[in-house]
Length: 189
Image (cartoon, rainbow, N blue to C red; front, side, top):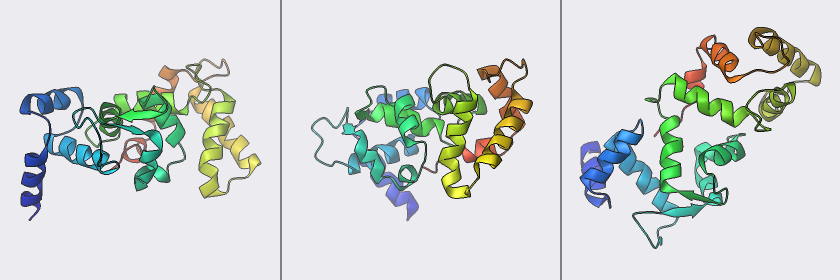
């Protein structure tokens, strides 16, 4: 039964074999995943005028359950969708590729750093970590004192040059100490 559904998806693709192969080369996704994601993307607006280059307002992505509950959705959109108001299929594919199980940890780490760098200055400050915790604590009910202790611990562990900031290489080093990161930074396709 699943094979029939996959075959049906493959037949309904608007992309040529060569285009699908190009998408595969540029992402960490399989042909089947690309077609599935295309169908998901287009399902948000079935009346698209250009099926080869579909574009959606960002608000349509709020219809995806995986994204609706994500406290970092605005940061994801900023990192993956530079137009800020619209999402192209290629933007969507890039995002889902990074969050796929097949994406390597160095790719996930790079995008995580950009997403969590709330002031976009290419380093983490105490304020960036505080914002990260604020977004997470809605579910964990952390007190401000707990947050301060966590921030102090993060900087003690990660700020190797003790300059008061966490650089990308320091963040990479921190991630290597967190085996759960790769499992948390993914979405099922």
